[in-house]
Length: 236
Ligand code: IPE
Ligand code: IPE
Ligand code: MG
Image (cartoon, rainbow, N blue to C red):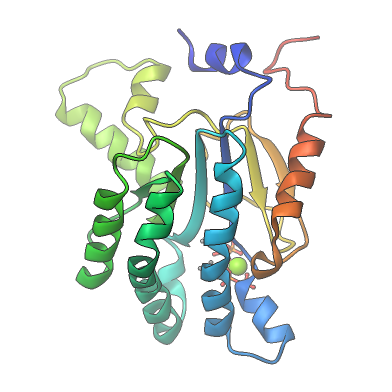
C-alpha cells in the first residue's frame, strides 16, 4: 500500500507530533543570560511536555534537539549541548514510571562516549514501555538519514525501490508519519528535520521560545489541528 493511503485512513487520529525545539538562545539573551542557560532550561522543559504528550494517546513525539548542522556553533556551546543528554540519567525512573519508551535518531559516531552511554542506558531502561515513544533526535539531519537509507538499500542489493522501501530504511521506520510539525521560536523553516516523514504534516510555527512552551500551547495547537482539513492531494 502507498504510505499516504495509511494516512488517509487514519486522518482523524493524531499519531505523531514532531517538535523543533527552537529559541533557547534568544530566550536566554532576552533575559540577560547565557545561551547555555537557555539550553539548560530548554532541556528541562522536555520532561514536562513529554509527560503531557503521553496523556494524549499519541504513538510518538519526536524532538529535534541537535541538528547535523549545529556543529557549526562555537565549541563551548557545542560541548555544552553534547553533554546535556547525560542529565537524562537522573530521569530514567521518570520516563519508565510514565510508561514512555525513549528512542534516539541521528548519527552515533560524533557524540561523546559518555553521552552515547547515557542515551543507550535510557533507551535500554525504557525499552519495555508500551506508552508514548519519545524520539530524541540528536545529531540528526533528514538528509543524513536519507543518505544512510540509500546506502543501506544499495548494500542490501535492492535494485529498485518503491515508496515503502524508502520509508522502511529511515530511522523513523517504526513510527507513524508526522501529523503535526511544530516549530517554536519564530522562524519559519524546517532546518533539515523529518523531511520525508512530514510530507503531509500540518505545520505550526509559533513565536513562543521553547523554554516557555507549555502544555497549554500544545493543547491549543491540537485544537487548531482539528479545524484543519487534510486532503492528501484529494478533494473533500
Ligand atoms: C534550539 O535553540 C536548540 C538548538 C538548536 C540546539 P537555539 O540554540 O537555536 O536558539 P536560538 O534559535 O539561537 O534562539
Ligand atoms: C533547528 O534549529 C535545530 C534544532 C532545533 C535542534 P536551528 O536554530 O539550528 O536552525 P536554523 O539555523 O535557525 O535554521
Ligand atoms: Mg535556533
